[in-house]
Image 1 (cartoon, rainbow, N blue to C red):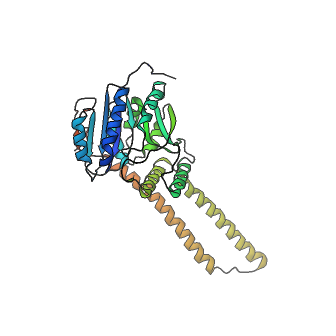
Image 2: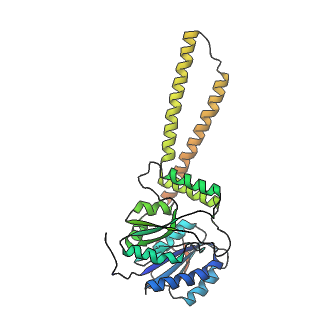
Image 3: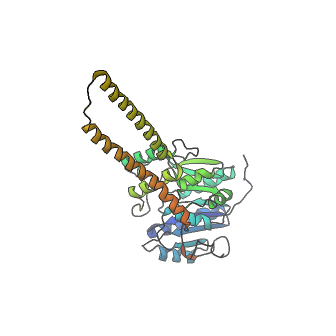
Length: 329
């Protein structure tokens, strides 16, 4: 394994933020204090995903205090995955750290992540040891999701691993080459591969307020992940169709055999009605699943940008560069 003990890398840290005005001040102070102890060349990129609170005012004040800060304000709320993508594409460091803006990711783990990078790991990702802050229903649904998305999939997505991670520059460059619009970042991290190491962590209490990413958002993201990284639903439809065909053939053979052997005509009205309702439901379900896949193909072929940046403050590790085509307005 290649070691990097002699290297002193520049560090970029990306934080997507949505209505985190009360949390960002303390988080930025603590994080910059940690980062500047690890490297002389650091940048902290905060991506404002269309916040409706005072995030913009807080960030402008923080940018005046800290030259290492870069503030990216998206033109509207695009979602966490596009906000992460915006930060990753803006990051210029030799290593890039991803963290949430709610203060639940321990800043104290960043030095350990960097130490494992120096030991040869290209990706160091944090895995939740517990989910005490979630309901029992959310915990069960999360477990079912990972089992389903990894079912028969060559790319295995680590269970309970979120966005909190450190990545080498070559991993970041690989992620930047992935063009899809329906982005499921946990799956993309796994897809690009590279030498990865997991570390456990206990999520801290939120600095302020409650999570903006509830059960509804989790279900939506899980649905996107399954459709983006698994064809298990399509295979399930194929298997269901095969089994129903075998049952229909078997039932038909039984009815014909009973008629010719015993001479008893089987009353068929109830059987026909129930059968029609059942198979109509199966057909509608199948069409719905297929439509979800087709809808995502439709989104991909339009080739709209994942995000638009309305404002940038700060230069970070480099000088101001021209916006990439299709990425900024």
